[in-house]
Length: 127
Image (cartoon, one colour):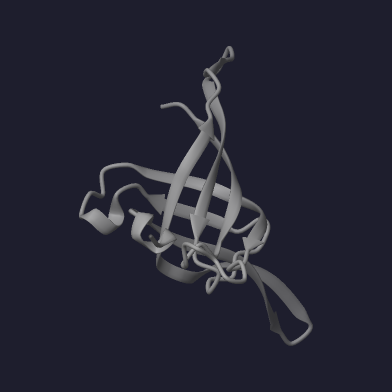
């Protein structure tokens, strides 16, 4: 049993970085990780909120991934559900919360349990 066997989704990670040119510093969003195996495994779905101009959806979910990948709070995550299985139908855009890292327990009966969990903020306007 290994957590990586359960990673059926893939994720691209975008991070805002500072670029300095002379005395000018500007912010740029860059892709820092691509095709990271992961899995969204729980969610707290809320009903769409209706407004006069549009409806919006606010959902919170968690994503599990290997500890080898560095995720920062505020990173933009583009997650393809079923991406490792050849299904690229559903793509989710979310922002990362603080990662919670779980290390391999000493003398674990089931090895391969080390992973990290990241809470996600999904907030989208409904089309």
